[in-house]
Image (cartoon, rainbow, N blue to C red; front, side, top):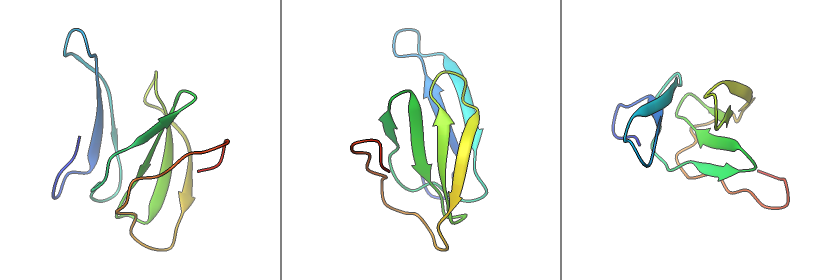
Length: 80
């Protein structure tokens, strides 16, 4: 998914291996995404938490955290 200096998250078709979409943040992504109810949640070192539509790869919303997000988001009972 990501590594040092990588700002882009990719969705890959599990059967064909083809890229379905890509989403680029403003800085590094150093953690794994969380996926729930058709939304991919990722944190970035650009100090934002992103919600991305799992089908289209389009941003649904972002939340300014005030600091780097270098841990994986958790989702439970509709709360990130």
